[in-house]
Each structure stands twice: as structure tokens, then as C-alpha cells.
Length: 440
Image (tube, rainbow, N blue to C red; front, side):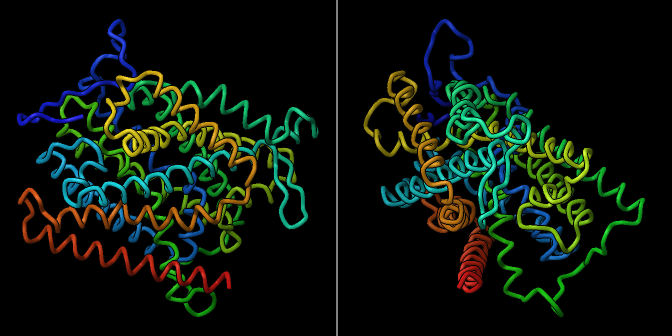
């Protein structure tokens, strides 16, 4: 897909069908609200459950400050990408890097996108399987929602349940022709995240009214539990929570006015900050120092009563459905980058319906197979994903500004790019070293 010198673009939808308005040129189909829903959904994925634990480590005031700082840096790097996209001819992230660094730059982006997005999709299926079918850890069997309701049956085993979700929930969504076509499912996924926040906040306020909440720390507890290096381990979690750079170009290409993308990005960042801080504050308020790295575990431990069990099942099911609706948004950019890598000299994916269908089905089958065969791949992809997300969100956009092939960077842009790259590298190295030291 290439843009003309006037800034207009000759864009073709993913599946071409002249008889359907939905499959005509995507430019003009998308609204700002649809872009906001898709951006928010890209950000608010599985990481929402880890936010309360990061607030516990950082404390409430530094926690909010770090969230806000990362959101500001993300907004800056997104502006970098949008400005260079407007000045150049590329309409993809990989193409943008190719303009600055050639084929190696393009390959670096594509590898990072594949590692990050494929890892996310596999982890989503694993989490959905854990919620619905349970898992076994440390010799203890944790029943899933379906097993609690119907007992352990052949049809509610992990392989069959995930296959059902893939075929009847995800498959129809991943075959939708445009990113804008996912706006309704993205809106529902954000609504489900809000439902989770509403449940958590209601429980926290009720516990506070009864005097059962624990003391919350405003600052890190350096005296007892937290070291200065532990603070850096929270940064990759928050960076992953705000990383959506891989979907900037597909979402932008469908807006009637590409200039609206900056507006949509800032609205999305504000919504995501509100979501993250709300769940971080109320989750920490509800469970205090006993908060786990995955807050679902805390809900599971407080489900002894009938009401507790109902709340636990509601939270787990809404979370599983939320991930199922995030899945197609992440899959969209993964499929695009793989096609761009493997079939760079072939016509765009839109002009080859069979190639689109085969690639989509193969990706879905690969994701399902890995999630079933290797259900403990979580930590491997979590490690790689946190590294590649930092590259996609900060290092690559900063490098594009410093290269400045279009001569549009101002001095303050280059200074900011250098600072962003240095901060990204330092925090990532310290976080990785601290995690390895803890594991060791």
C-alpha cells in the first residue's frame, strides 16, 4: 500500500468484494470512536491483571506517576511514527523502518511483531484454558469454571474447550476484512474490563465500609520488602500495557482523516490510564500486601461462600471473554507483518483471497497447537515479549527520528529520542537482570 504525493492513499481492503460496501476501500469507513476502541483493546490485554501487583511494589503515588510518564513517552513515540509516515510513502511499521534502515530495519520490526503478538495470542489461549478448564500447579489441581459446574468431562477438557472458542468465537472475528470491522468486539472487550473494575471497586468500597481493608502504602517499602531494583521490574509490565505501536498503521489507514489518529491516540491513552489506575488502586485496596502477581488468584482464594464463588466466576468468565475479543485485534497486525515478510514481492494481501484465508487459518492452527502442546510457555514469551515491546514502543521510533531520512526532525525531537532510547535500554537491562537474579 503506497501513498501519493498529495497524502491520499490507494488502499485496498483485506478482502476485495466490489458488491459489498464493507469490502470497499477502507479509507473513510472508520470513525475516531472505532479507532479509540481498537487502540484501547490493543493496550488493555492480559496485563491488566498484573497492574495491582505493580502498584503494590511502587506504592500508589509512584505507581500513578510511572503510568502517566510511560503514557506520555508512548504518545511522543507514536507522534514520531505518525510524522514520518506522513512524510514518507510507507503505510506499515516495517516499511517505515525500511525507509530509514533498509531491509534489516524492516526485518527487525517484523521479528519483534511476530515474537510479541504470537506470544500474546498463545498466552491468551492458555489463560482462557486455565479459566474454563483449570490447570495443575505444584501438584494441586485447580478446577476451571466448566469443571466446577459440570464436573470433569471429556468435552470440557482443555483441548476441546479451546478448540470450541477458537472455531466459534475467534475464527469469525479474524476473518473480518478491516481493522474497523473489529470496533464492536473491541468496544465489548473494553466494557468487560470496566465490569471487572466495577466488581473490584464495589468489593473494595464494601470492605472499606466494614473496616476490613488493609493499609495501603503511598510509597515503596524500602525498609522491608522492596529494593530499588525491584522498581525496574514493574516498567516492562506497564510498557507492555501501553504498547500498541504495531496497530498504528492499520488503524490510521482506515480513518477518513489520518490527522485524527493523534486525537484518537490521546483519548485511548487517557482511557487506559483510568482503567489501569482504577484496577491498581481498588485491587490493592481490596487485597493489600497479599495481592498476587495475577489478581485472579486472589479472587479464587476468596470464593469460599456462595456469593464469593459467584463473584469469582463472574470475574474469571468476563476476563476470558475479554481476552477472546482482544485476540483478533492482535492477530490482525501479526498476519499483516508475516505476509509482508514472506510475500513482499507478491500483490497485497487484499488481492489474494486464497492467500489471506490460508495464512489466517495456519496462524490460528499454529497458535492453538502451541497453546495445547506447551501450556507452560508463559515465562519464555513473557521474557521475550517484554524485550521486543520495548523495541517496538521506544527504541525503533527513536532510531527513526535520529536517522531522519526526511529531514523533518527538530533538535528537541532528537534529544527526546536519545533520552527515550537510553531510558528504554537501561530499564530493560536492569529489569531483566533483576528477574534473572530472583529466579536464580
